[in-house]
Length: 332
Image (cartoon, rainbow, N blue to C red):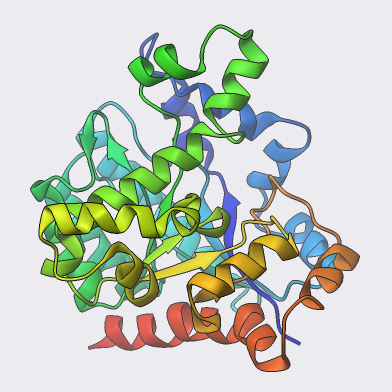
C-alpha cells in the first residue's frame, strides 16, 4: 500500500525571520506553535530527519507546504521575494528526492497580480497545488482582486488548499480571550478558532459565487472539512439566499476534497462518507503537528468499508489530484 500525505509542513528560515520581525501587534501569535516540542527542527528539515519519521510511519510521499502563516508579511514586495525563494527551495527539495517529496506553491497574495504570476512560475517548476489562507490582512479571499489567482489555478488544474489561520484581533477579543494565555491561544487556534476561520472562508468563497465563475476550481479542506461537512445542509440556505448555481452540499461534493490532517478517527471517516464520496478523501498526517504511529495509521485504515475506498484515500486520490492532473495542466 502506498501512503501519500498531502498536508505535511516545512519552514524556511528567511520567511520565519520576516514573520517574527513584523511590528508589535502584527506578529502572528500562532507562530509559537511552530516551536512547540520538536516541531522547529522537524519543520526546518527536508532530509534524513523527515524521511526517517516517514519511514517509521509507513508514509511514502510528503506533499510539502510552507508552515502557517505562510509568507504573509507586511510588504507586498517582500512577500513576492519570499514566496519565490520558498518555491525555489521546495522545487530543489523535490528534485533532490523525487520519490519522497512533492510540494505546493507559496503565493504572495498581498500582491494578487504577482501571486497569479508566481503560481504560473511555480507550476512550471513542477510544484503541485498551492496553500492559501482565508484572508490577507483584512481582505477575505472572496474579494474580486483574487480572481486572477483562481483563474490560473483552474486553468492549470492546481488544487487550492485552504488552510486555517488565527482569527482577526477583534474576533479573538470577542470570542477567545479571558481564560488565560495558553487557553486563549488554544481556543483561538487548533482547539476551535482555526477551523471556524477556514470553514467560513470556504463558505464565503462559495457564497460569493467564486465556484460559479470558476466551476472547475479545486479546493482542499483539512481537518475533515473544517466543520462544513457537519453543517452543510444548514449552509445550503446561504446558497439559496445568494442565488448560487448549486447548493453548498453540491459544491462540497463536486469542487472540494477533504483531508484527515492526522485526525484518524473512524467516526469522522463515517460522517465524511455519509456526505461526500470516497474519491474526495485524502490522507495526511499534518506533520509535524500531529504524530500518528504506523500502528495508529494501520488501525484507522481498517475502518474503511472496502479496499477500493481505502486505496483511494491512501494514494489514488492524491496521485490523481496532485501528481497527474496538476502536472498535465501545468504542461499545457
